[in-house]
Length: 236
Image (cartoon, rainbow, N blue to C red; front, side, top):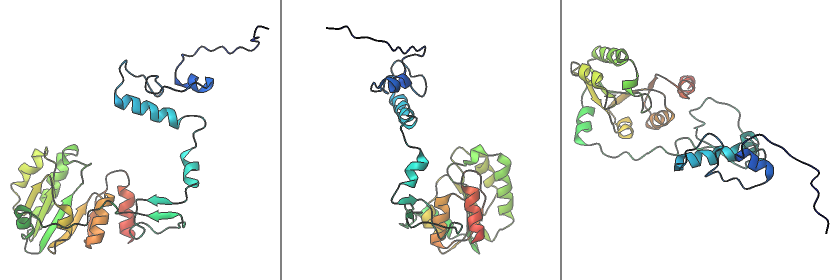
């Protein structure tokens, strides 16, 4: 029997890490072999999951997101075509904006029900959402908000400030027509007949909830899609 002949050689100077597994056709053990970054000797679940995700997405034969999207029969988009800026569309695009919005308007507890009855001309609701925590912005911003509140004594202002925002709470003690809380029953408040205005950060869920309740908005966008959301509301 003739001895096998190896006339072709492949020489490499790279470590035998995940990319090399692809080249050689070996199964890639992403739970133990680092691909995206170094993994610890005893990798955590997060490290393994991150390594697996990047290894799969960056494989040479993995289709691009654009090619995947172009081959879908139906594309669900988390927007509302009535609220958004009018544009062209396709029969394969289905808008599901507000799918996760809670329409269940439950009865508010005594604390919030009592606050909603204040104000000679009604209630104004102020909230910057959960991402733009009031402790992360300059104290002067919320102090300015409270100073503006004082100029409208016939309205009662319900203001959301996160639980670590001591400054806003201290300054609010001198404002008779302001109530500050770190949690508010937003859906129920928006459907309350005494609510006159919602001052919002323009988060999409907040805009959808306000639209369903028929409440006018003042938008203060901060980041992400909030500026675009504000422009869409302005056009409406």
